[in-house]
Length: 136
Length: 403
Image (cartoon, rainbow over all chains, first blue to last red; front, top):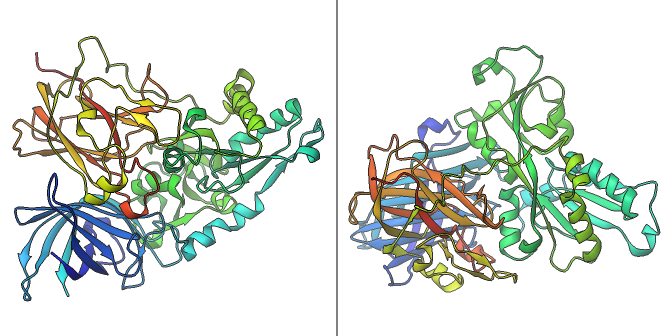
């Protein structure tokens, strides 16, 4: 997986969050081969604000999705705080690159408006969040 | 790290500015000549510290300025006091001196219900009022406990006045206003104090830390802070059984590049982590970076027995850990615990040696020989300022061993 992607984070419906999905423009690149091959996926323009570090093997991505204490601002103008493990099968996009169209996300997420404190719009720890990482 | 508008607002919140308190004792000696000692403490602990700081001022002659707000960053403070969740990065980065860190006590969370006698228990009993809960890192666990509550029923605040006036609130006991207080099962906050590296008044700051640890200080703090519960002494017995070999591991390439403790073999055997007294200098740990993992063969088999079955030893702070277990090295690995705070103090070991316990009960498996320990902090590698990013694993122990 390499190039430009759109990350979508979908909170578990049981969390009763005020949004169904948050999206972020990302860039992906291969990252290391030992002890397992990896892929690093970073937020456009503010790479350390939202960082995905995946182990990429057997057509599967698995790894950590994390933000700093400042969270990351989504395309929908909501701020997301995230500390979660994502797992998803890699399928081939129309342009031949790999992408994840159905991924599971386990862990912590919190939402707020752009200037809010962490979790002002809710906090949820779940095994059943979801994510997608689609080529763009 | 850049400062977002929300962070800037938090740093200069009315509470933070209004509560920049100078605690002046009647017996101050030449305080103006040598300046004042600055202590920065998070909102929850500030009320607990005031009587002890006042007494220190009277007895030592040192003026202590109490600056209220998240201890990270410490700004001009000589001493910082915060919860594990606020102190971990400070201590690991060497901004605060781990060797001087001391636990002062724990602070439970309470439900505040006004008027007293309102129906107890569920959140529905609290309708239609909004539930007020503490903001910031220290409030994260409390906010997690409220998950599922609609956003319009929730109010996150760090304004001490607003918190004390709340009709329904989930707060550290020290911030609770009038009304009925009901004990919550949210993990209590742990007050940890430490000297800031390069503190301008280091000698006086050490004296203050000694005072807070001494009989007089502890007595004054005990009116607000409880004794810290340490883990059961179940672990570490003569018959203890620890992980014996590494089956698999992975760290992101970024973590491999930036972290200094990448050897998975360090998680094997009994707890043996040593802080070498210099910033970021340890022996005997593996840092898991951003979402990294290590899978080990216990050789012995852990079984679902009384209480927890597996213990993970983790160094400094309360960085969360996720644990999976299997009977075969190829798996399938079953989730045993997701992002469990790994900050329980371990009796008999150094104060930076912490642990978290896991129970096989309810996981669908009754025994396990292989366990996978995964970082649960999941902090962006590129933003990390230490060489110990992620959970720092020292050892993995079977608590209930198959005979």
